[in-house]
Amino acid sequence: MLNSLQYDYDIVIIGGGLVGASLAAALGPSDLKVLVVEAIELNSEIQPSYDERTVALTHSAKLIYTGIGIWNSIASQQSEPIKDIHISNAGHFGKTHLSHKHVGTDALGYVVPTRVLGQVLWEKMRQSNNIDIMTPANAVSTTPIKGGHAIDIQLASAQETHRVKTKLLVVADGGRSAITAQLDIPRDASPYENAAVLSIMSSDKDHGNRAYERFTSEGPLALLPNGKKTYAMVWTTHIDDLERKMGLSDDAFIKELQAVFGDKAGNFSRPSARNYYPLSHGVVNNPISNHAVIVGNAAHTVHPVAGQGFNLGLRDVAALAETIHDHRQSQTLGSSDMLNQYSQNRQRDTRMVSWFTHGLIALFSNDFFIPALGRNLGLKSIELFPLAKRFLLKKTMGLAGKQSKLAMGIPLD
Image (cartoon, rainbow, N blue to C red; front, side):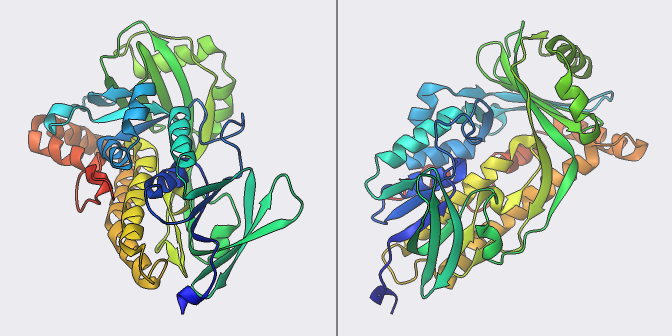
């Protein structure tokens, strides 16, 4: 019997980044014993999840964090609402304007520094008596056992490994450890020939809480409101041009950006240090294994167009937390029935977002006449029909289809 075995934890989460920490925070009010294993300490200069970059949270993400009980803490530190979005096609007539008024919400989304999210999430974990944190530490291997997994964890401060047993293993490390491969969950990822260049810059014009998405031949260029007269930029760039663009002086970089975007958002200045990351596309067919599940970027990577990546992972968190909550006091925690329920709940949303983002890139990242005409007419049609705007916004805001309790802002307890 399951309860005849001794387990150190009910749930072990590999990865304490945005997705893993959000899941742990969602499980904080439960009576389940949870361990979070994170390779890099929160305040380390090399911590990639909680640096000075920003993330665009959808309205659905706000509701999830409201249900978890931390949205007010996030908003009180730094949160810039996105009231509307201007979408355009460089060199063509197609454009459209989307507003929060089209869906009756206070905002379409919110721009939040990942540093702020990290501080709030980790404080929530530390305040939860049922959550332990191992950091800096790496999960080096996992072995299936009856009703769960035995995981060997290497602490940075010790030579020997520490073994823990759990009923449910959750991998949320973006695939940077060996654990995902050991679970025998096939993952087929295809790299784009692009990278995303990131920077924060000032403008001489107030943004008025408007975001911009401008499609170019290289891919989308996004500007997100981030403080007074400040934008967070995500510029899709061909890999072959990445080194040149990263090596430009600040003045030359701003001049090139201004030439591509125009002056609709004002005149740019004072760009921050530039970062970049390569782009890829991939979704696992089934994110579950024996008493294990992978979530977030470990399970799916999508193009950052329309800001769907982290928000998709956060909806994984909401659905998995609710599924765990429903099974927390039974013998089915981590069982095939439980994990199949989660997988089926997430299948449609994951596939739709993957198809949507990949399709946008395929449609907008070329200058052939027929696709160019089609996308311009498409943008113009969206602009003319309010119902089309509402349909598009509900999809991209995570408000379409079946919703978990957290995605409706309802606490699990």
